[in-house]
Image (cartoon, rainbow, N blue to C red; front, side, top):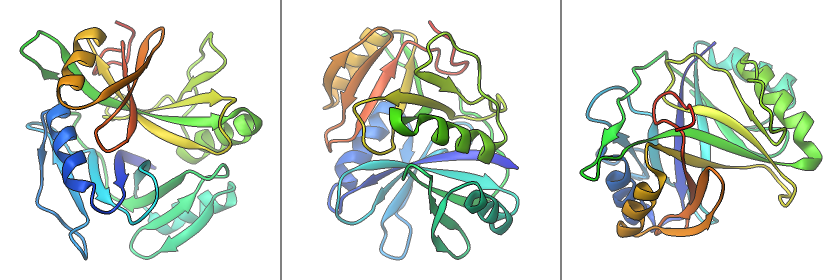
Length: 244
């Protein structure tokens, strides 16, 4: 059983401080002291509620997002994930795996948490990082979406747009999981979504903090942070996920 979800912003070595400072400002959370064998990761701690965002230096390569699923029994959950089609990369006190489409995720021990409240900004906007979108090539859409629903034991919400599927988790989770079909992709990737009561105002605030807007679409804006991490700002309510 999954009790909580955490998103890691994995960064090339040397980019941690810049990206962490940006996400501190975006979220209003406070970066913890560095931890790990080489001081490679930190938690972004909200003023209230439980932490669910981490920043981490992860060697060479491009920036990426990975998900930690907090479970009661790590070994049993890992065995089940492999049986469903995942590939194991590392097993110790936590287990790191790849989904059938190649998205890295980890299984860690731990129970539930308390969802932080949305942050309120001087311009009147409220916002919160409230979703991880898993971007899936059209060629493996059926296999990958089936894997995530089976792994989590969460059903999908019915949607009129067949290119999006939302996993129906307990409302007591800070992060929703959204599946998005993208014919341009060759392998599975993931990005963070920031829900905001005023997307235009939130985009302006992020640009002032050093982000760039890449594209404006119907319902969301594609952004990139100062370290090159792609993410989106959406019209969805920061806490409920409903359209604003």
